[in-house]
Amino acid sequence: MKRTVVYPGSFDPITNGHLDVVERAARFFDEVVVAVAVNVEKAPLFTVKERKAMVERAVKHIPHARVDSFGGLLVDYARKVKAVAIVRGLRMVSDFEFELQLALMNRRMEPRIETIFLAPRDTYIYLSSRMIKEIVRLDGDVNGLVPPFVQETLRRKLRRR
Image (cartoon, rainbow, N blue to C red):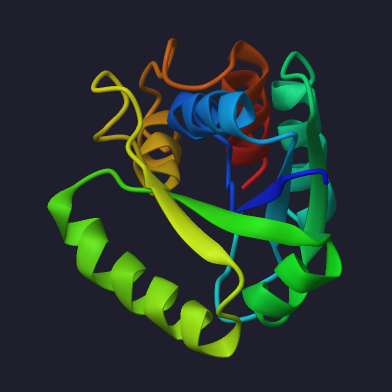
C-alpha cells in the first residue's frame, strides 16, 4: 500500500525551510503531496496558481513529491488523496501550541490520519514567508533562504505594487 503524506501550507512564497521539510518527509513516505491552501481569510501576495507554479518548480528535484491545491477542511482533502498522515513544520516553541490544537482536532475528525511534526534544519528554523516578503519589500537579500527564482519572482511582484 502506498503511504502518502500531505504537507499543507500557504507557501506565499515557498522557502528553503519548506523545502527542507518536503525533502525529509520524502524519505519516510512513498508520496508527498505539497498542498497549497486556498484560504479566503488570508490575503496572499501570490494567487493560488502562482503559488502552485512556484512550489512545482521548487520541488521538481524531489522524487515522489507532487503539488496540488485544496480548500475546505484539511482532513477531507487528506482523505481524498488517501493520505496516512499530515506533516507540519514546527519552527519555534510558539508554533507548537497552535499546531497541536490543529492536530488534535484533525485526529478527532479523522482518527486514521496521523499528524507528524518536523522541525526544519537549524539554518531555517527562524524563517517565515512573511519575513521573506518583508525583507524583499525593503530591498534586502534573501539569497540562500528561498530558491533563487523565488527571490526574483518576489522582486518583480513587489515592484509592481
